[in-house]
Length: 586
Image 1 (tube, one colour):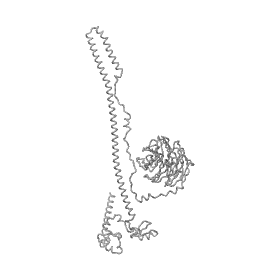
Image 2: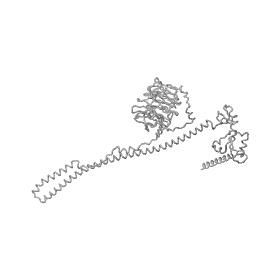
Image 3: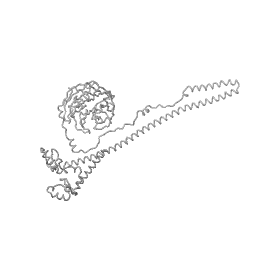
Image 4: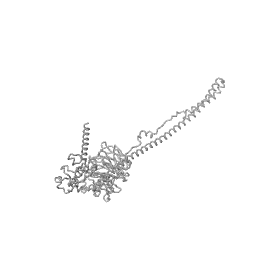
């Protein structure tokens, strides 16, 4: 409550002060000194005060002020308040600014020159600097920049409105697709149900007919038995013993025949109880337990086609050529350790962990392994895969490894939790994934037919960086706002920005053939493995210079991958089989 009250008091005081200042600016400054409140009709920009009609006449006739520029008081009030508040007098000496120091880029009064700018060479009159300020190129550029910014804001606003409309339209389309799928499923199940019920009635009809036939036959036999019973009763009452005796032989045969009939039907299928039952298709049962959702809603981030106007300052910054690092010519490698990769499979990816451990990803045709070695080369742990791992990278923020799948049938990225040493997440994507690297918590990968993309492993949103189709077995690396990509088919190394614009392409087949693994040091220098040329070369940050650092003579044989630890300044180079080499970068 006290804070609210204090803020209200401050706000009221500011409003009162503004009112007083506004009111005083309406009065003539000269008359105000005479304690007379007379409204101003003009404003002198030199004297920085208002003048009434009488004082204006004296102001024009006075030798000291006859050349001063004045404007109508109505025009003065149109000047923005923040401009009006800019003082034309030195705050320290309370004298008017008359000089401009180009070295320090500041206006100065006469005392400022004497006290602080006696050694400055570029001292000019302030009048010369401000002359034609409104028509100067700088003012025009400010106007143009503001117009460009305003236009860009309008473009962005319309683009976002368009995006909202697209989201709404896409949502309606997806709703229709869901309803269509549901309708198709319902129609299909209705047909299956109708066919099954039709079959049920057919079986019932068939079995009922058989029973009806048997019942009809039994009724006939039952009638014949009844006749025999009547005859037998009549014989018993009226026939002689001789007639009875002679008739019994005939009746016995007829009764025996009826008994034989009953025995015959009791011995076949006719008297078995027929029961209808339903054997549910297991696929139908699994629908309830296995299918929990129609699908998965995904949000994919695509580059905007929005074309913003760049102001001249940004254009100038973009055109500045960066000077290559002075360290480039002096960089050398010193072998520290030769490491057995402990696998007969092809070793295609590697990375160095902050704690000194080393990770290798190895693959065969349809299986592979990610193996983690301690700094001394002993085994820390390994994970077998039912796919062919390609590249591997460590994500610092989550203490996990991200493993790309390569062309192994499963188009995915596997996330390994380093704490529990298991795959905890699999991210499925469209297309094969080869080289992979980190940019903060996000992953950048070469997606063959899908170009180069960046994915957030948490929410799986994807941003397209380069839309061009890439060949297989490409590697990627990032540094600052740049992205580097090797193309073994064209023998090139390409530098992009994060919007996919090409900055330079390095190609020199006399020194680099089938480039694959790539790494970048703290100065932006690139280390690239030449698989066919059996070497490692370093390329300057501007792509203009190169040197060979390692060759076949240093033990390289079909090298595939490379990684540099920028914290420890060590470089790891891995052959396709058996060996890896750890170098310190000097």
